[in-house]
Image (cartoon, rainbow, N blue to C red; front, side, top):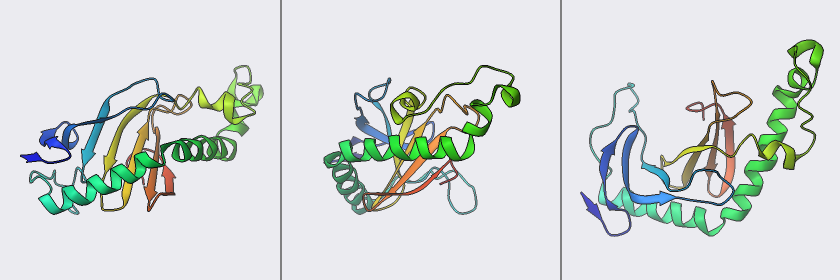
Amino acid sequence: MKHSYWGNIEQDWAGFSSDITFSNPFFNKQNVEVFLGEEFDEDGEEIDEPPTESRLDNFAATYQQFLNHIDTHIEQIQSKAFERYLKLYAHYYENPEKSGEPALNINSIAKHNEYIKEIIYLRVPDDDAIKLSIRYQIDTEHGLEFRFENGQIAAIGGIAET
């Protein structure tokens, strides 16, 4: 299938992707896949029908809007990821008695940013929604996923939790 914005649409390892990839200098990896639609349906079955032309048009508008405000979104990711670290992880990783390791001394957004630079992929699951998945160096088992809805972070969790 071919789309005017997305180019060739093909089934990939985690759903449908296209010729369009995502890059941003904040992240270590460039040209990561952009998946179009969800990977699984409500019953947990893999979706094997590509999105319709109309949905692809809506996904394109959503993605372009996301890119138009990417600097703000990256700042939001950095800030919210650091807040999540302080809330869920700092009590362990900043306390050598608990972790058995020297404290990481992550006391600023800038220091924490080094742990969130490994992007895995980006997904446009719905109209007006973007999911950005990161291999989180603090918690590689769960990772970090940010769900944007209408240009704002709506949810933060482990990968596939948002």
